[in-house]
View 1: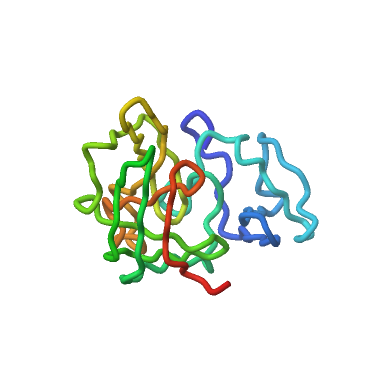
View 2 (view 1 turned 90 degrees about the horizontal axis):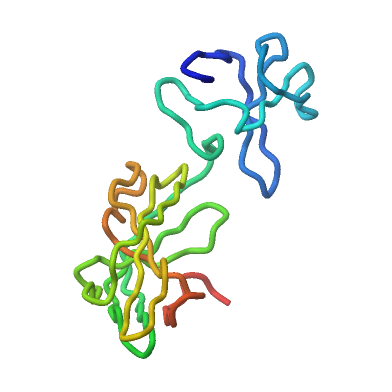
Length: 188
């Protein structure tokens, strides 16, 4: 869509996969007109349109954000007893073995924890958000411990997509912004 008008509508779109990159749509060249495009080397007679060349992308009736979704991407949320301890400026934000392991294609596994197990008096909601095509919109949390403020130390999904429903409202923490001590989810 560009300015509320459909500029590409195809039943013959291809999904092109390249190692290390998100998939891209490839459209038959004769179905793309009036929008920037370039030939798609992996699909003769097809072109790809830069993501920002249009205002909005849709797959059927659902808007697609950031990049085309990979139908082979999986998000597995598994209850675990792996320990998670998070500290900021010497204060413990969480220390529990009631965690959720999140295994996502091409990403390192992460531990999530229920909000009621976190010392929420030491964190405040941030204005930061980000988007994941597989989990939805993430909200961020800032830790404030005494004179120490650590922006966006944690994130959560308050309205996740169905495949990530089990992490609704749970938090995960950045190990480069806090001291995160966690049982490994993968072997060395």
